[in-house]
Image 1: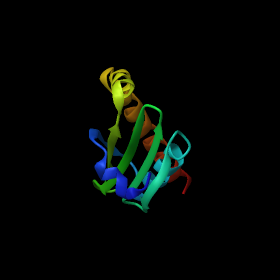
Image 2 (image 1 turned 120 degrees about the horizontal axis):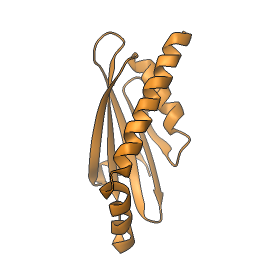
Image 3 (image 1 turned 45 degrees about the vertical axis):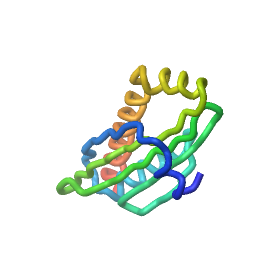
Image 4 (image 1 turned 120 degrees about the vertical axis):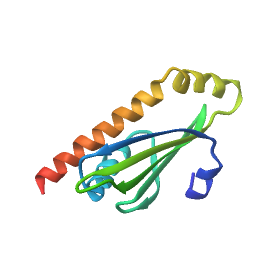
Length: 125
C-alpha cells in the first residue's frame, strides 16, 4: 500500500485525544509505538502526520495520525482508521473487530500509550 491508496479505503472511525506533550514528541512516540505492530509506515510529515498501512487475508487498512497544537505542550491527536473488508469473511471480520468495539478500545489504548511515551520523552529532555 502507498499513500495514494489510502483515500480510496472506506472510512471506519476517528478517535481524538489531547496529549500533554509537544507535537514533535508525540509524533516520535507514535512512530515508535505503531511502527512495530502489523503496520508499515506509508507517509510521514514530521510533527504533523503519520500514516500506516497494512493488509491481511480479511482486510486492507490504514491508520492515519494527524497532529495539531492544542496549547502549550498540548497536542490534539486524531487517529483515523480506513479499511476495506472484502467478501463474506471480511464482513465477518469487520463485525468481530469493529462491531464489538474492540478496534475502538485498541486505538484508545494506543493513543494513551503514545501520550505516556511522549510525556516520558519530554521529561528526559
